[in-house]
Image (cartoon, rainbow, N blue to C red; front, side, top):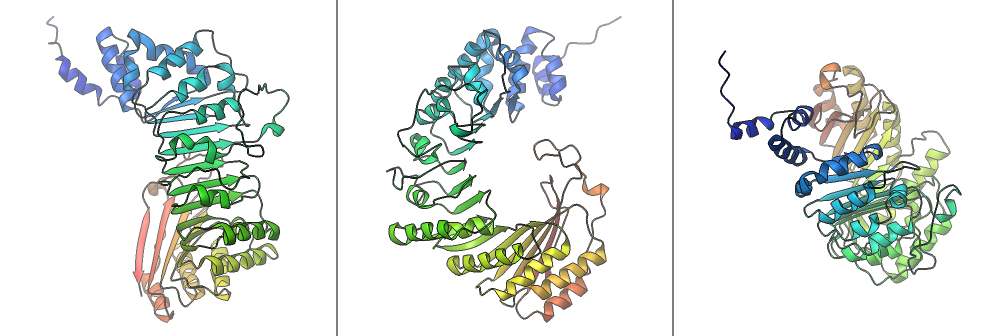
Length: 468
């Protein structure tokens, strides 16, 4: 029997590009040559190498095989996750530190729930702070961590994006979680202060996200001139003046906290600070809930406001939200308002109708409604007709987006388990003639755009722009 001719090596390398990851892993186990080339292609292909706690040791051995030649191909993103009380074998900490110290081309690093990582691998913070190639860094902590603060303060990479998430402070730490005071930032009343912790990247950062912090010092003497996106999420009220001083050129501000009510004392505190010590001139986009934005008392002009409705259509909550929104619009004078909410179609109509009672200069409006099921053709048409009727007369364009939620509440954007594609749903199409007639009866509205998309879809399932 005649054996088939051998496949040329260059052709075999090209064929690797068409193999799924599982096939590529199987192929690199056949011989040393393919192991080397297959490992290289596998790492270059993966958008993110996500290492679970139970796989940390095997990941380190995989990367260090053949004198660690694979390390140079780890270029996109690396995610390290911890587990409460995670245990690693004695060799793993040293191996991971060696890998991180030899990485020269990694763009993004994520540490998810990293508290126990710092406990299990004592030299981890020094290894990460010594890296010089990172552009994006994300760190999630259950509680304030001194090793994490030390790592950020000494970080040599010139980051473009930083995301620091903290679940709580030292006072919230359970007694079962070990903690040693290794390093402390020299600001007596500040905790997890992003302005101070990210100072080494002050001239390179373009986006900063901070979750749970305490910032009390007004002027830290640190300025981030290139940051255009600032996202602040806090369990308590936010004092905005330190951020105005540190981030003078932001275009998009996203704010959120757990409070769902207006606080006159917090608003007065923020108002006085901006009145006497400075404010932003203009924001391109402001995102948040009405109570949170109200408490900030921003005195600058906002071009576009994205409002996360509290989904309480019944008084007194709804009435309170409308009163806060009226004050916000008077302060910031937005020309565009986009309301994001979850619920029924009629709730969107009621919300828009209430805006007619608020003095404003809006010329563009939008509603993004998250729904569990889609309406019929007739239901969508009637819903659009009532929205047009409820739209304030000064508005000239309206964007209506329906986002279909997954039926599984546990479904996540990162790993959707029940994604319903367009082929499995009946997508409603509105009666354009009826909508166009409603537009002609409105004194100002000339364009109405409706878009339907899924929770995890990258492109709209349906989009239609109807001109009046």
